Image (cartoon, rainbow, N blue to C red):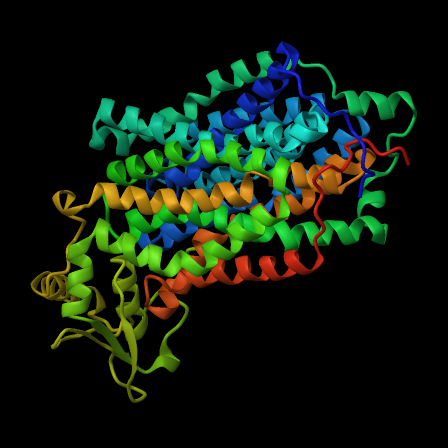
Length: 552
């Protein structure tokens, strides 16, 4: 860890310092905007690029395509982190934004599955991989660049602006989507209008490149370069020496893993939960989340500044713990206020799947190739697509699975039978009628949504996000020596956010599908947040006041 030193400033921010923060933050906002479009428009992407498989598998496949961008982020961190430590911070994250902008623009032009077949999902995944590589190099560069300009007593406050960029990027993406959707209408938006937000990225790319070309190199990097202290092998130095690797591992498991799942639960899983499980229409769900983001965003700056006074660690640890302890009641409350009809039907007419559980397979197939042919799979698939709670009840081997809705039994069928298609149509019609009679809504009634309370709940979860995310850039920068900082801090950040966080939606939905409880997916972020809390409290040291330049 860097030695304690650094410039202390009590004077107002200069125009040059404001330019550093503005240029770094604005470019990063646009990168996050590009990156999150795939998540916000998952339904339309699944229909366009993955229409060759059943709708349930297509949506999960799309989520995994979204997660693919997260999966490669650590590799982007390694590639661009190494360049950033050897060549410089400025030029490296200039390259990353060009890659991000162009790959996003291409997604807006890609033909669908109906036009080019399997090449459509393959090309979409390829663009997501390029986006992930770019983002893997972007965040570490922007955070390092700003922190290396900041006075020691304002590092949390300055880097907190970088922490707002992911939320602002998501907010702008939701705003653009809402504007385009309302302008062209729902039918046109579903047909081609969803592509417009992707195409807009080419304009944002031009603005970002123009702004970043005006920046100067980080003073810390210029100093170590002038003194001949840049690392010749940053990867070896960062991960091949135990003194540095130990800090990387602590940063991952004691900070970024928990931060990541809290972040993605509060800003992304809530959106999927509203639209896919609670059946709130996309426009309403986007507005709710956007309002919560708008209300919560200033708290990034609040907690970043607070970390300059009381330390980074206590704020991050408190955020992980409070989030883990409150997710179940908060999501239950969200279901109550967003779709009270669904909640009432679940209590009045609970659903069970009566089947031999040994015959039930994992419900969602990640690569979209599964055929749900046995009766248990057919039952669970039908209920999961509808976002319904159900209990698993054991039945003797060899029996055809049944769905019990209240006191009514609905027989399923053998998907391998010769007349399976006809039986499937009859089953779908019977189940739909039974659910409707039992009071289960096909979608949330807009007139019954309690908007104020839903937004309050979403905002509370957004506050958790700001607690864990606001101070973390300053803490990660302060944990590592300047010569290998870009590489060292980028990898744990992007493994935490790219893997632990990025796979949260797909993993949580898979857990829900297997267990039958719409809230069971929350165990994933809760367990990881608690693990991070324990490791962080026991082993991670406070970094407030540490230097950004190490004389060693």
